[in-house]
Image 1 (cartoon, one colour):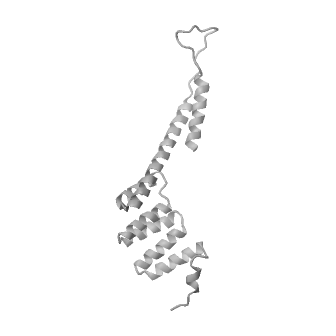
Image 2 (spheres, rainbow, N blue to C red):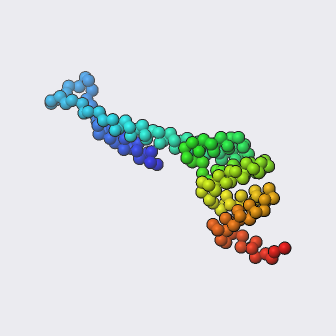
Image 3 (cartoon, one colour):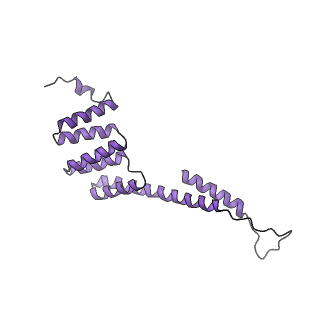
Length: 169
């Protein structure tokens, strides 16, 4: 959206500067005007606008590639898409959790835990805390699972109310 606004401003400025010029075959009436001085600002704005549009299209393409890779279970394609999204600052916590779930489904608990922790570093979410708890349970790391669930309950106090009401064994 911002790139389109910049592009619109650039086009309006270009129309004002260039305007409609007479053809070479038409006689020019009145005094001859010299061409207005070229401003470098329009070129810079146009270049920045084109770069913004390019980055936006790259992000859309890679987000789609990540979704397709997760649905098909293709770990290498998902990992590449997250890496490329990281180049433009769009890797995000949900993509790290999705990648961690792919690793966990292949039994690579260490890699899954690393991606969950990366997700929590980017932005803690209940989904990431819950996934870290489940992965820690899978690895039989009970202390880590308990701290993950404590982190989840700190974010969403009502989560798991029924489980806390159960009597301890």
